[in-house]
Amino acid sequence: MKQINGKVISFENEYYYVKIEDSTRVIPIKYETMHKYVQFDVDMMENNHLKIGTNIRLIQKDNGICYPDHTAYNHKQQKFNQPQNISKCNNLLENVPEFTENVDFDSFVNRLADLMPSIRNDKIKKILNILASEALSKSEKVNQILKHVHIPIVPVESKMVERKSSLFHPADGIEPANDPNKQMKEITETIASLANANTTDPRIVIVGVNDDGSICGIQREIAERYPKMNLDQFQNTFLVNFIRNYTGRNDTFMSSLDFNWYQHDRKLILVITINYVGLNPVICDGKIIPYRTGSSKSKVTGNDMVDFIRNFKRSNAS
View 1: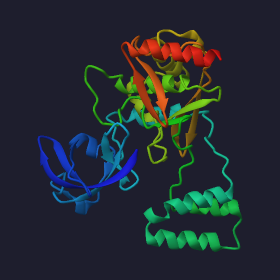
View 2 (view 1 turned 180 degrees about the vertical axis):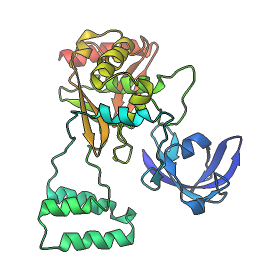
View 3 (view 1 turned 135 degrees about the horizontal axis):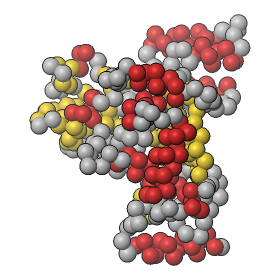
View 4 (view 1 turned 60 degrees about the horizontal axis):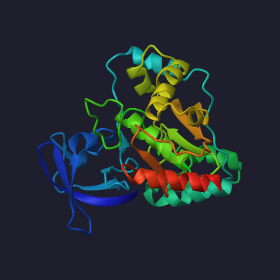
């Protein structure tokens, strides 16, 4: 995925049409996709729509799908119809351990340097004063800086790591009424693609994290869809069963998965670790073999599956 810049040139039939910078390409973006997770600045809006001529920063995924860059705009606070969901969300976080990543101070400063171009000047001045302070220890400097700027604590996406923001809401914002588990299928295929990687090293899928590495959490969506379940019940009744059924009840594959729940800043994260090493690839829905291409997921279907299975067995047997 990559960042791109564009300009809103029209709005018709619930779609924005955005002209990509330094290109003749114009892409359509659904209103719901544009506004679902971000709160645009007031001067960008007019009558609840983005103004025509407004410049906008987008993220383009490897499959061509575009949506607003969440790091460039404020995150929209989602509203819930039932007040009891707030209490339920808090209950889901009970006894869930804190998510931490051991990062040395130099690595932290390097991450901070990468983010400097996107940080406001007033915050940069405060951060530089903190770094220059002789009265603060390194850990105190880190804690002070994190009060002014978000620095991702989760691993970046790679051939071995995939991040997803939601269990139930697709990144493209399109949620078919006849397929409420579209996103769960996507996550299961991602898990299968990592399982089908030619490696014995652990691979992970982290759910509850935005593309920019910020943690959005998934406790609210679980509380809304399954309000009577605790985390153990949700994992064993829905999550595990869905993955098992969608992958053809492959017991060897299922036994290679570890499900671990964490929280950070009162936001729930699911980390799925894949340790699959088998002679047969994991197949989804009886007709799809997902596999990794760099940090992206690809699929094999139809007659090509025969050659893939043959090559997979040969590679894993050697």
